[in-house]
Image (cartoon, rainbow, N blue to C red; front, side):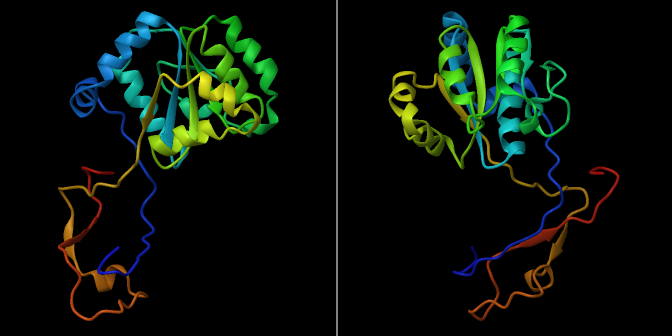
Length: 220
């Protein structure tokens, strides 16, 4: 929002780079303490919250970097959690066409140290997550803007709300993606040229400065 006016920008497709373990530790100093407790218990439900699949995947990437080589056998039932350190059982296809229960049994047969489930909104996923979290570390995706909204969604999980409240998540890690312009090629830009169809209701220049990306060898 700029001076009371709302603008919408069509940004380039998100390109999410996995953070290094050092970057994760610096950005989330409490994550190691949480992971140590999770490893000591060897069970618990961890929610990856985000307004998009990419945001939830970024949160999972931070969790995996924090884990390092701990909980090495990681099995995912969904393609949102693709990672070199994760064995995915689902091909890149419409996940709704893949029966949930047979796939769950196939994943459990591998005896994973960390089981990664689909979105909690998928039929059968929430009760499975709550049941399995008492046996092993379980990760599931929840579509929400932040961690608080994810906790509220769990509390309002329909007929399972009481069970969800009793089996509270061990932790919720939320990510919100932002596009950072390449410092090598960004150039100052006039907001009127960035948004030619928008006419602010107030006169005068909006607070700035503003920049636009040009594209260069460093960022492409």
